[in-house]
Image 1 (cartoon, rainbow, N blue to C red):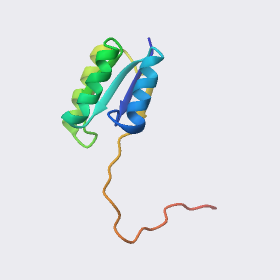
Image 2: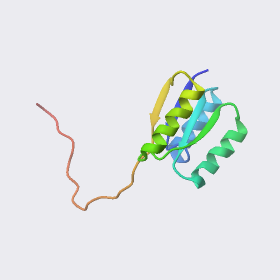
Image 3: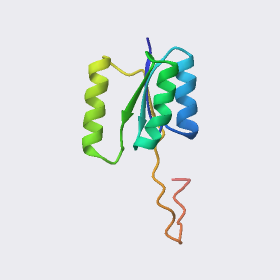
Image 4: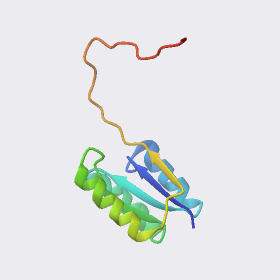
Length: 104
């Protein structure tokens, strides 16, 4: 069985990826930051109990990263795919600066 860990898996693109991978027979470690988000993942787990593993995981928390790693290491020897889909929406500072540079 192939294993994938998806951060930000509780809604939008992350949830769609979790569904798609689990429908294809992959075991999905589906990470969500808070309890309301994990409820959506629990519903997906009920549809595919052996393939979806919801994990409480705030990517900004050292404790959550450690706990998620321990859980994954307990379940599998390795991940085949890691999808970092979680994001931080902090808004803008009002003066965005270009970050793309081209050339030497």
